[in-house]
Image (cartoon, rainbow, N blue to C red; front, side, top):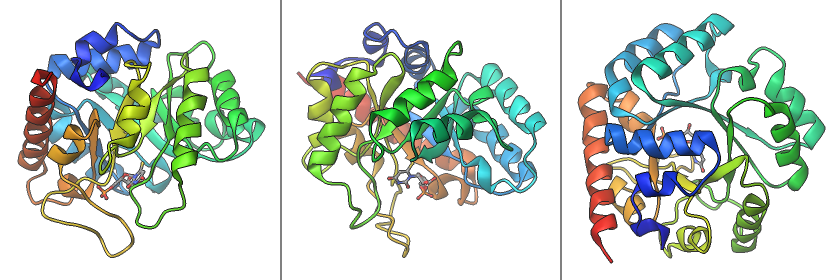
Amino acid sequence: MHTSMRYSERAETTDNPIAKKLFSLMEMKKTNLCLSLDVTEKKKFLLIISKVANKICVLKTHMDIVEDFDMDFAKHLQKLSKQHEFLIFEDRKFADIGNTVKQQYTSGVHRIVEWSHITNAHTVAGYGIIEGLRSAASGRERGLLLLAQMSAKENLITEGYTKKTVELAKNYNDFVIGFIGNGSDDKQLASLVSISEPGFVIMTPGIKLASSGDGLGQSYATPQSAITAGSDVIIVGRGIYGADDPASEADKYRRLAWDAYEKRVKQI
Ligand code: S5P
């Protein structure tokens, strides 16, 4: 079962350079925490990142909510990602036909492919979406996460959809580096993925301490329950950037998730 392997061992099982980098830097920085920095101003964004950069493995962005976005900001983030060794993940959730997502990935205001190591896509449109994004990323070190599950209450993703998403990922494992999903409850996603692909990473949103929802359909689990159920990286947004002291809060989430990982890999 891949969930009992260390991230460093799993780095050796994938050929995708971004997946390799992610697994390696998680082990090096001792963090499996992804910060979802959903704030709307560059200044606030940079202030928070300066406090938490050394505690995260991935910085997840929704660049379309940043009102004063420009490409200099994207370049600055790239510089920070090198300096503090975290990867950038634009949570774009592509969901269209191959030809359209290719343009959305490379063009427009954000030109995501130029600065984001990782992005993600829904699989509702089938294999064409992966091929479109892969062809746009060609020649660059990039990785794609597929949304196999969602944290929103009563979402329409079925077990069959999740299974087919995992199958699709296996067919494109040069570019697809893993999944967004929770694995919790019945550990379904983790066990589906583990069958043959320890190189896939499972990243889990909907994580917050002492809260079960947000009144808009979000559902929350704890860092420990997600990691124990087979998630590799916890994604935390408001739990950190909404706290009075984001740095100490980030450290709390990092410690809880990392300890749960250490416990998991020690179990046979
Ligand atoms: O199923 C999902 C998938 C994602 S990527 N549920 C989610 O909440 N997300 C994203 O994770 C969401 O878009 C947001 O950026 C983050 C969760 O934020 P939080 O403030 O609720 O922790």
